[in-house]
View (cartoon, rainbow, N blue to C red):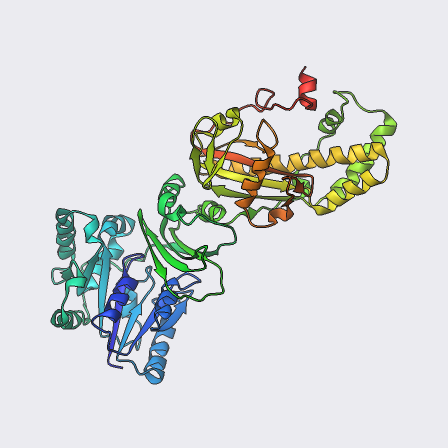
Length: 527
């Protein structure tokens, strides 16, 4: 093994892009092994490089400068013995500390190249200035990336700031222009010379980040990350600093996408054969009590929520009103039957509840675009939802068990019991919806966002056929619910609804002015 070099840089700085460039140009005739260290559960960079038939060793779910530091020297020795490479290129996690990496015992490294996305310089110096000054000071060679995204004057200002930290630093503004002789000089310059003294008061801890890899179970519009993700990240606190993923297209091919700040890039991965589903990894700044998974996960996957019968408010007064007693109490005989059946229903019921977030907007006075589908609810609904920043599809069901119990009562030819059982099913599913809306409202308050009422196809003048569109945005049989050709939900006591979420959304009183139902028991009571 002749050479071992580290390519170090923050998340999204372009380390994998540099490796691809080297393997196609300067190192194309060399036996090169790449050590990939991904802090997420899925090594997206490793998959891309392996698909190009490069030799890749993956070190996942940890950082080589801390949790995997003792393993790294062993891995290098194994590579030396088994693969006998000419070169080893090591790509540590974008959260790694170059300083800690260079201090790993028995780790023989010939040199290191630092990469810096120029658009991230100010962010890094605000995030943890002491830490990044130390990393830049330890660097001998630094490649600037994405310089075309800012002006030449801004590039010069960044260069001057870097040289004020490390005057001996060699800065390359576009490594793609380097010829063979210049690359030889770069490798020599990048050799690591131990700096006994660092001109900073004390060692700075790296910034704290968390990461999560999410497997996609729901259909997703592939343009979400290109057109909407940056806006959503800002809406929910701008906590996510990096996102990348592998997405399978409708034709079965795969592409890789990256989002750093507001920058989006996507490229196909030809001939990738992969049995696993699409995956997305996100990195975010740790803040006490705040995780972006609470908002990003429901965008990527419809999520079933915990809901038990004990969470629900099932009042006798509402049930009596629903049954037509108009504020009066049923006679003792009927009351006893109601209470017996209510007890049975609550013991049997297994509530199901879930939701998914989607982007959307008002198209005109009658139409909304949600998840790239055009919906035509009633004009009043469109008016109340038009100011939403995002939408939530919420579905609820009493579960197959209670639905079967209601069917049994219908088939038993006891009209009273069948009527009471049906009323209980309707009341319980509405209680599940109310619980789900209340829970969602509390979650959104954390982000200073409001929620609207829930509006359902089949009510308030909204054509029930559009329920098919809503469910096409959810996984098959989500919350155990399926649709018939006539848009009837099974179990029958199920509800689907659309909710608006945003800073300018207002919860309007849900009354007769919204609903167009003529036989509503509440409308009869009002009249």
